[in-house]
Structures are given as structure tokens and as C-alpha cells.
Length: 539
Image 1 (cartoon, one colour):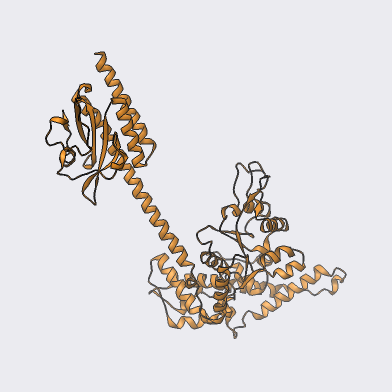
Image 2 (image 1 turned 180 degrees about the vertical axis):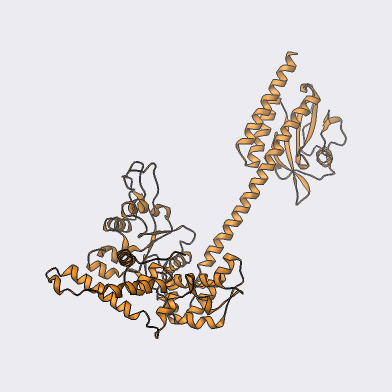
């Protein structure tokens, strides 16, 4: 009774150790080798093998063994009609050979040396439900077998654990293959998206841009992209990156104007835990995240002077220190900066560092505004509509008559404004054809870009001139305090209210567009709206 109890205890310990090995690693061959070692050491097996079925060869192949030469791994094979191993798999049943020396059907492929010691051979199919994976076999001295039924029960449990492990391992392998394939697909899609063919344009201005992009893609120097808002500076930066030798490394973008100056340094260079209030953990900055790749600094002209100094040091030393830290971290980053501001004027006004200007001003691309490349507007419009079709699953087409009014517009918001205008028009189109009548802003107001672009349309011109005149007077008032108050020119309140109201109506109450129409800033426009309590409709 004591012997039976000890054996059961040993069997349970063996199954437990096997389950721990199978749950700790999904490397198939290494894990199965560990399982067989546990089985042989704990239960005094002379040999053990795991034969797995190969769908391609339709054979059982040795994947792991104990007590055999390592040269036999992958070389030892059984067809499904061969020997005890093949029968155990084909019929899905356990097979016992009490004495292999007395069994004429036993093939002895592993060339065991026959001795006076009798060996029993046990073969158990590795299966889970209807899924059959292979066969687990062991050699054990006949004299040490406590009970054949007990031995089989234990081996079946181990075979079931192995089958569950193989199912999970195959699933994980399949998932990793799918992830790898998806990664490669997305990588090719990104690379293809930002190839030179991904930029739209055929005019001489864009051909010059293409030539500059090719030059910058071959170079390792920092770049500066200049152009008005909405001309596609970030798209050009991505095109340069994905056509360069750094294309397989990260492309990281940051808008210097969108981040408060107190946080910009931490965003760029990272920070240590406790460096400032709210810094609860160490965080890598954009430079570290872009290591080996490209960092795109959009609106570089809005970067504070303090941050400019630290940026200059990183560009010179190729290393940085996180905010609140002392560790010097080397970085290999190519910087592509972009701005719509005149940096030369800013240098003269001492709002932009001259040495940083020379660091960035190595290679320059001047992106032309859309009004200077009108010949590209039909191509851009068709490209935008294609994107809208993909996004909204539509089948929109552009009426040929639409290209003429689009080309006459001056597009102060450039490509971004063209995109917005066509998206609004797409949502207004009723029969899958975008026509001139669909170019609406707000409810039923004409498109503001058309108003600005028409040379003959001077409906708003007097008000714009008057308002600009008012701005000049206001600026003069701020500068010349010696002028007597009674001699200062005063702006007629009624004209100003009429100009602002008309510009708001024409722009569909989009304040940014109304401000551009009037030649003032958004802040100045909002001041006048509040000052005169002008109604702003919400749609």
C-alpha cells in the first residue's frame, strides 16, 4: 500500500512539473525537450520521444527525445502505416509492447542495443478533442512498471498537456506570422504613400520641389521647409524621411506652437521623475523616440528662446539631458523644421537665434502656395475626392465645370482649405456628382474662397480697406503717444460693424476665414465681435 501511495505521489509531482514547464515557455522544441527530461528522470524511463505529424510530408517526425542521438532529431520519420508509432497515430489509440525483443512488428528504428533487460514500449497519441498532433513514446524496464493502466493514465495526462501546449503554440505562431505580415504590409503602404508619386503636382513649381526632395532624401543634413499654412509641409517632411536611408526608423512630429512653452522642453528632451509638478515617472522625449530616424519640428518659429538654446546644443553635441536629470544621452536624429514665418526678420528682431537659424538653414524647400500652382488644382481636387470616397464609402465624381471656379480661387488656406471645401461640397452633393452649386459654406452662403478669388467681386473690398485703415490708426496710436487726442483719426463705428458682419456672413461664420478676409488677426476679430456685440451664428 505504501508503494502504491508513493508512486501516485511521484506521478502527480511529475504531471505538476510538466505543466509548469509547458506554461512557462512557448518555444516548442526547447519546451518539449524539458518535458521529456522530467518524465525520464522522475519515472525512470530509458528513452522518450515526441513524434509530431508534418502536414507537408504526411509523416511523423522526431521533434524531441531523451536517450537518443541529437542527429536523429528531424531525421527519424514514420509513415502512418509503419510500426507501432504509425499505428498509434493513425488509429488514435494507445499501444503497449510488453517486451520489444519478442515483438516481430517492432521496427526498432532507433537501433536499441538488445540486452537481458526486458524493455516495454508505450505509445500514446498526443491529441485534444478531434485535433491530433503526434505520438508520445517511452521505453521503460518491464520490471519497474508498477501497473500498465497506471502508466498509461499518467502518460495520457502528459500527452493531453502537450497537445494543449501545441495548440496554443501553433496559435501564437500563426498570430505572430499574421502580425509580421500586417507589419510588412503597413510598412510598404507607408513607404508607398510617401514616395515621390504620392505628391500631387505637375507644374514647374512642384517639379522644382520634387528635385529638392530627391536631393534632401540623399543627404543627411538638417532641412528647413518654408511655406504658408496648409501647403503640405508635413507631407513633404514624411516624403523626405521615407525616401531616405532612415526610412525604417521612426518619424516623430511635434508642433512647437501647440505646446505651452513650460512643457515644450520636457516634450522635446524628456524628463526625470519629480523634475516638476506632475512628473510622476521618467519619460522619454521626442528626440529619444526619434533616435535613428527623423524629428519633424513644425512651426519652429514659435519655439521659445530658452528651448531654442537647448535645441541648438542637441544639434551640435548629438546628445541631450532630460529635464531634471544629469545623464548625457547620445541621440542620432535628423531634424526637419518647418515654418510659415520669416525667420530672417525674427533673427533681426532677436526672437529667433541666429546660430540655430544657420544650423537649420542647410537645405531649404520653399513650398509654393496653391494660388501659384493653379494648374495642379484639378489633380489635387480629384485626389481629395478619391480620399473622400474611401473614407465615406462613396462614389463621388467631379463635374468638369467645377474645375474652372476652383482654379479661379486664391485659396488663402491652401490645400487644407481646398480639402475642407470639397468635403463640404461632397456632403452637399445629391447625385454623386459634385457641382459648382455644391460649393457652399455654412447654410446657403457662397464659398468664401470664391469671393476672395474673383477679381471682379469687390463687394467686401471697401470694408476691408476701411478696417485695415483702422488697424493702421490703432497701431499708430500705440506708438505715438505725443499726438493730441483731439487730432487722432477716429474710425466710424458703423462702417466697422458692417465690415465685420459682412465678412462673417461671407465666411459662413468661420472666424479664421473672416479674419483673413479682413486682413486682421483672429484675436482682433474677436475683440470687435465682443466690442460691438455682433451676432455669430452657430451651425
